[in-house]
Image 1 (cartoon, helix red, strand yellow):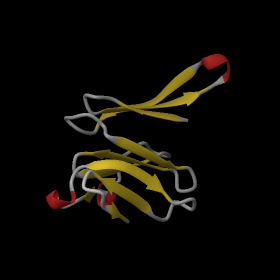
Image 2: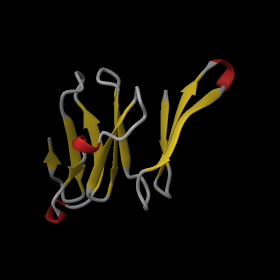
Image 3: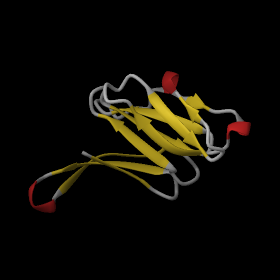
Length: 103
């Protein structure tokens, strides 16, 4: 599975097959601006997608946004620059432009 974030805020999830073939599983527009970073938790089957001050969580089984899991960071924390799940998928770490690490 491959997730691609685009400069216009779209997300595309592909299932890769043999011989460089790919099947589109899902396409949606999550933001009005570019996707900054993404992180997949294969254990929890979730995809975190970040833009500016918001992280949206997508279920990789239904391809729906888990609206109750949405994260918005405070403006003084800076913009989201990096996302990373722990190995067990329990904790999502967010790195910001001001050097903060949020869990």
